[in-house]
Length: 479
Figure 1 (cartoon, rainbow, N blue to C red):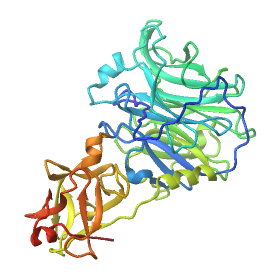
Figure 2: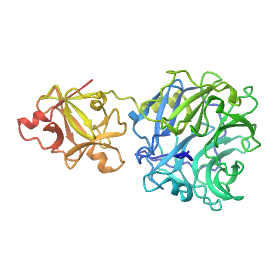
Figure 3: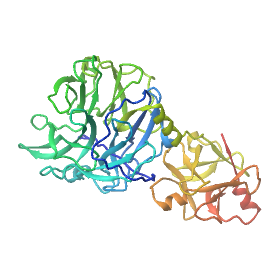
Figure 4: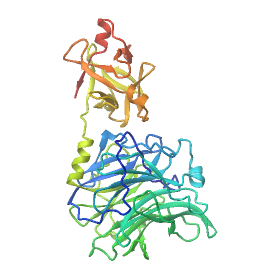
């Protein structure tokens, strides 16, 4: 999980539709879900306040991923530290309710690793949905406050327990106990992720050895010796098996045989392929900063059967994928998700009166240049406006989640910070070109008397008062 120590589970919330929160005391009884056809990954991407939020990616085969929302964040946390890491996606057994639970942590946003380890948030951040598309406002769930001298709450996960008819929620807490101050895995039971039973120690390693990241996968009968297998980062990537979530677990071994230990990877994330008895264990390559690597197996309980993928057989998309969670999607779920976050074409924005020049970003400034290099600096997605109807926002292709916005009537490329001011300053109405109706002009949402125009090749937001400024404010959106 962290730098040398641990990587955290986190989540975020953003501009989302709110709904009345489900309050039933007992979850719906388990029901057979429709066949699953796709995959949804929730993850975070890095260390900034924008990266430590909730991102989503979709895959049809479990190995090649496409960023949703054009690579921008999907949910932003507005509670606690206002940052989240290590999100877990949870589906109710009846398939009628979903939760995202995450670590309440934002490194570099007023908190460093030492504080996070020794005096961090004792809360998790939780969102709830009935459709995977519209999410509630986030809330804080205090899980470590009842642990004597519990100092944080990291990397949450949850699994439905048919034995007790509720969820086992588990996470890591740093706590002095039995002469050792270290991270141990605690668990509690919950029916709704709003209240929990008294936390109990779930996994503790001998001596001073910490354990932080743990995720459990359920294995069909007839595959391996155990119904459940869990992977944990505890110096190794250790595999354990059990036939009961809260029962006795047997050590099965680790992945050092394929060169993967806790010194290189963390954040284990299980995924079963929809169409065959084969699994992927994704591992976050935190030591080299490269994000997730898939490791394949036909038997999760047999460490010797894990293998590295062939070169070129997987692709993780445009954003870095860090410690997260994967949900196998039914056709109905997949259709809703893809309708909510459709792919948007990549375009260039050509100047009307300097037709060899295109809008580009350079060192986060915005200008028009010929022969843009690298080419992606001059590529944009015109997405639905961050505010207002019938509007557009102009999102960078190679800096997902970054938009053209005006500040003091100058233009710059900036990450969406979730504020209403940013949304207004990064939103425009695309209208008929002021110099030629077959071209386009971009009218400011926040200053309707001003338009995007270039001046000395730099982009500005100015009133348009003469023929020169009309030409400077006219562009063609082209592929």
